Amino acid sequence: MKNLKWKLLLLLLLAVFASGCSGQGEKPKDERFYEDDVTSEREDHIVVGFAQIGSESDYRIANSASFRETFCEKNGYYLLFEDGQQKQENQIKAVRNFILQEVDYIVLDPIVETGWDEVLQEAKSAGIPVILSDRSVTVEDEGLYTCWVGSDFEEEGRMAGLWLENYLQAEGRDEEEIHLVTLQGTPGSSAQIGRTAGFSEILQRHGNWNMLEYASGDFTQSKGQEVMTQFLKSYPDIDVVISENDNMTFGAIEAIEEAGKTCGPAGEIIIISFDAASEASFTAMKEGKLHADVECNPFLAPKVDEIIKRLERGETVEKIQYVEEQCFDAFMDLDTVMEERKY
Ligand code: GYE
Image: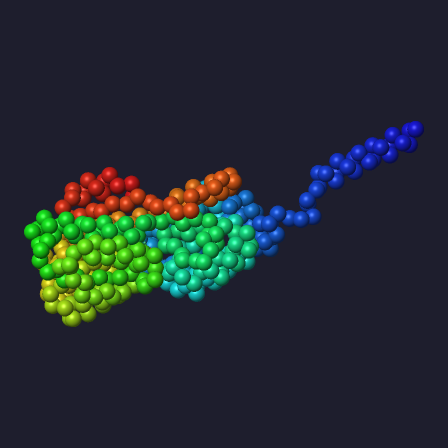
């Protein structure tokens, strides 16, 4: 009898011990990956791999800063930041690397829209959600990414076109033959495709608007300056420059001044830009060198953070999430605009 009691007690202890250890043979996902090279700090955080495009513009610098600030350890994240140096192949490598590292989420800012099917399929097969930020992709299966948060680039293009329409009308030039050139962003990028398409919608409404040429300045100041210099050589009678980002605009202004011409409300050529993401854009408007600037909000990381938190709680998220934007111009009280602006 006494013996039986002890045996039962022993069995009970074994059962308790076994249940307390259950699952210990198999380490959680993050631990398996990080056991060699990663400190315990990472284990307690949500690991996010961010495949950034590069550092081609003021927008991009602000966008990277937004990610580094938001996805910090204090906020519960461990951020793996990869700079693609303006090359899609580098971004694809970065995504593959994130998959190998078994990150919890991948955030991708795709330099161009096409060419992502394969690597996104790999992420999907690995069970890693992909959030697109800023630019988007064109893929066969929309299920290859969880959602996209960014700007409505077509709407931005339309805003630029409508601004020009109103301005020319106010100046009494709505019947005049108007010669335009466009400095485009990186060919095939969402920002280039959308802005060109949106502006072209308004362009088509005006038989007297003559678009002389589209050429890419790749969203950089140096190429913007180079292309504008060529435009000025080819066309002596440019009335309007549409420049698909501010850094190309800064280059274009230099090219215009070097050619002995002037632009902005204080000059001859009308110039319209996109981004308004840095003080320099407002300075150009205040100095009368730039007419209008359509805002493109680079502070997307808090939105992505919100999305990840929702996914962590098992909630569903909207597939496309646009940020709100507006158009600024040199005729506004820009000091007040800047003071009241959230960023
Ligand atoms: O306008 C430009 C940057 O994708 C919206 O990329 C972004 C664009 C932005 O280099 O300045």
